[in-house]
Image (cartoon, rainbow, N blue to C red; front, side):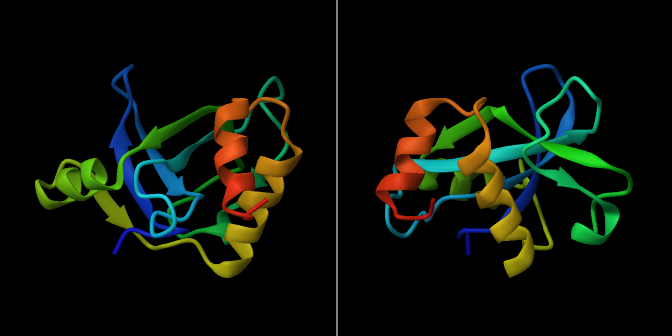
Amino acid sequence: MIQLGFAFLHVDKSGFEHLRFVISSPQVDPENVVTVNISTYEDRKDKSCILEPEDHAFIRHRSCVMYDEAEIWPLADLESLLARNLIQPHDPASEKLIDKLLDGAYATKRMPLKMKKILADQKII
């Protein structure tokens, strides 16, 4: 079931495969499911949420959340992609990791305001 903390691999517009996490509640707002992707840490990137290998089984080295590349998906689209094996599910985020992702979403200045509003309207941040 796709819910807050759901993790999946998805190929982005540039052809790179990234791990993404759902950071909103699809059950509250199925038309506006907010996801963020994880990328290799570089000093120039957003430092609002830095992840280490112990944060998730998929993460192999220091990484960061790319809040500026957050996306909104309709739940039906994600479910369709999952059913057709076009996204690959991974271990969901732990409660601790969900808290870390949401703390970063609150703190970052790089996430589009529309997405922050969705999270605020759901009382997630």
